[in-house]
Length: 64
Image (cartoon, rainbow, N blue to C red; front, top):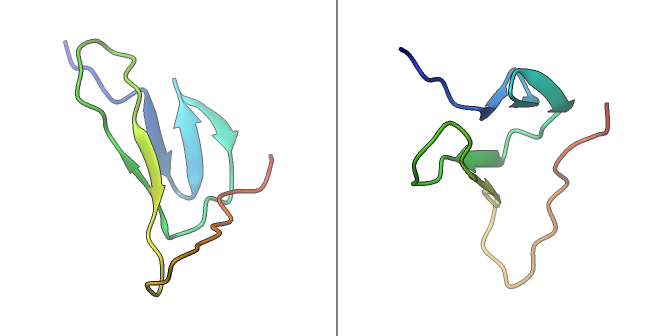
């Protein structure tokens, strides 16, 4: 049996269990899988800044 990730980003879309829940995800947004057991895990949604500063605001998506 092959188990694929339940939550992932593909082609700028945030997918959960094969359904697109957010589209137009910005390129600096990352999704890191969580450690755990089972098909459903809680990944970490993060962002990479273009420059280092003390305060960041990141646009993440547009509602579909």
